[in-house]
Amino acid sequence: MPTMRTQIHASGNDDRWFLCRGEDAADVFVFHEPNGPSGGTPSRIELAAFLASGSGSPEHGTLLTMIGSLVGAAHAGSGTPLRGPEAGAAGAEPTPGEAASSI
Image (cartoon, rainbow, N blue to C red):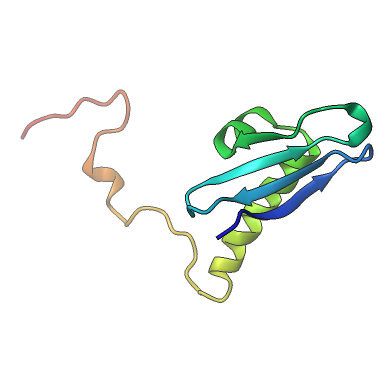
């Protein structure tokens, strides 16, 4: 299977970022394609490195929105709300700073 790609963002100067998946489903990365006049070299950025380094950039924000929409779509209509721990579960272990005592 060839590399699949979805455009994440296109900047005003024609730089483009794509979310890509290689032949192996676990091979997910971001591909940056600089604009022609800049003379830049296209680059492959591992997904974790892209997410760790790009906070605040439009392409980073767009990718996070895409990921969030996948989570929303996966849970649409499931009727299963996010819940906290079961009642009484928090009392089973001491809170920070509280010593566990043996009875």
